[in-house]
Amino acid sequence: MGNPGEFTMLELAEKVLAITGSKSKLVYKPLPGDDPKQRKPDITLAGELFGWKPEIGLEEGLLYTITYFKQNFERIVSRKVVSVKAHFYDG
Image 1 (cartoon, rainbow, N blue to C red):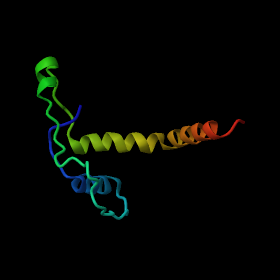
Image 2 (image 1 turned 180 degrees about the horizontal axis):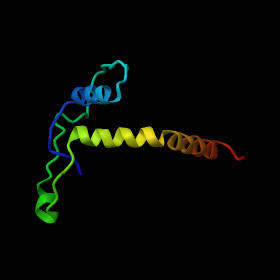
Image 3 (image 1 turned 90 degrees about the vertical axis):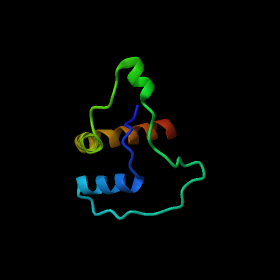
């Protein structure tokens, strides 16, 4: 659903680089015309209807996500390759 904690895409990218220890360089490009100017979801209705609120912050969520992809990278990539081959080839 999202988390109402607002942060910029630059802040997000910098956190990912810091957590992963990546030496990747950020590339700045013009924003698409339909890019949202605010990325802060209104979760009021979820709270009212379901009593739901986010329990995991951005950094903790990134740690979970990065750990998952590190542990499952080979399996994920091999599935994508098989899927692409199956789509383009009859064998």
